Image (cartoon, each protein chain N blue to C red):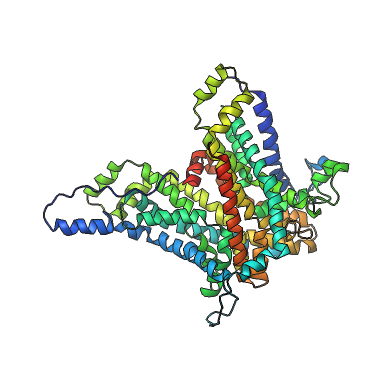
Length: 316
Length: 276
């Protein structure tokens, strides 16, 4: 993180009139501008109410036998230890949703990193119409997934444009209703939709590589490909870490795409995702306790994956 | 660097741009076509233009009503983020107060907590404890202050020279006055960036309003369009055209806003926002 709070610089207060000692003590207690607390208060309350409290509440729900009641009704919600977690981990549907996520990540994460870096490098060197290209890549990222899912559904349906272009090569059953292709299709869609954002991240990182590095490598006779491998890739290492972690988080959060593209995780659960399952278990089937436990397990897995990505891309 | 740019750069970029732009072309053309293109030879249709798809989807999901709901949802988030985000950003960048480090820690926490974990407790909180299901407030509350926006404001305020603030303080201006008359006018580009960054969130958001609105007259367009796609479409005469018309209506405002202001929206801002 670029900016962590710095302790306030304490200037030696001149002992002039009017209780300098009290004033200094107040400064130590409240800081030089106590009004800052009032300015930041709405945000602090918001974070406490919308993030900190639900976070604690999620743990509470996950370890108790929790169910919905009418508001104001007092009921007993006994502590059940790890029972909810055991329910989740022994549920074949849950395991399937994790397997599907693994398929998604194996396709989406490397493809995202490679395609974003290649396109960002192509954009980086004083190219004409760079702004227009950037906009073209960025617009899918800005557009609502619900809109684009509607478009892709038609493009990839059995009688859709993609299949009529492919002709005899079109898969049967078609992309989204084929259990081997449903999740890969979603992975491709998400890669396409998010890529513009990652291109921007890489562009920012590329602009920080001193051009002398490329020039001296070129004078030493390195080819464009060699320079890409030995100058560009190491130069954007931090960005790569960020891209991998963000892509993993996005993949673990999939909901809209399987909900709409494959009609709720079909065919036959082939594109069921954890968040879709959390929704089904927690809200449709009214089991918030198992859903909360599943959320915690998912977050732990994502955390471990992110940590691994961080380790793998860190400078040796 | 050589002066001539290698042709392969253009080849890669042009091929990719085609892949990125084509679905949008398909969407917009299909939205105005009686029968949206399904074969390559109909790619540049000459006839069959119609506005019927928009009336078709409007008859099922109240296009204007849903767009108004999207607008209220988004406006609420923008108002909250700009008002409280400016205050918090100014305080974090320019004031020294008790609780500053705690606020920074909270911001880091917010950036790291994933929505999967908050989904169930927030749903219980908002719909059960506060009784805000099927209300605009319930829709807005989880997005009320965008943490990325607070980061952007903080960074911009930090970049201003501190002498300006000292001079204003010596002149006896209150901090609120300094914020309003000195700081805000100097960070106009930050305001545009924040509005753009914040706008796309609630406008495109599907999952949260989908969870808490059962009343169709309150649903934002993303939710009602999704309902149309998954439930209603089969029973419509030309569902494809209607879906594309709805998709265009939902996509259009953000794309226009972005194209108008895209010069304010640079790679370094995004990088700064994400890295904090």
